[in-house]
Image 1 (cartoon, rainbow, N blue to C red):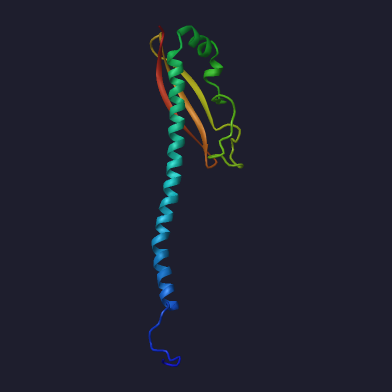
Image 2: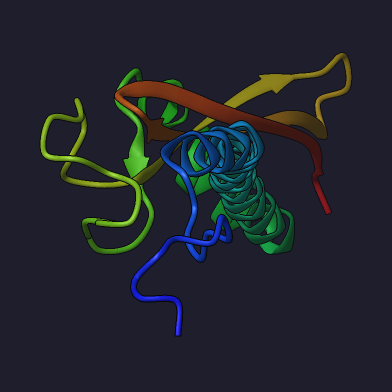
Length: 152
């Protein structure tokens, strides 16, 4: 027995060693967490953009599938609908809690669309523009697609 004498062998960490380990850990973890948050935001933005593009494509396919009489009745005889400044909604109104916050400008509906038409030099052909609008972080964004509608 040594009678309680300290022999010089320490069984714990010194404060300096703990502080150095924490500093190294923070230097490594801080950039990783920043990258993870930026990646999540980037993925959400791209998901929204893709959803808007899919909705625009679906509306274009719906217009392309219309027979001429329905197209003429829905768009050409009601030009105010086609050139309206107020976008129309997709389906019933809903609130997408994943992306919209209480302070967003347009909380009643996430995706809206506007259809615009231009006659071409040919009387049987129209250029159709479908623009889908959506909110992201309080800012309005949009995706626009074009097609041509042929009288057949």
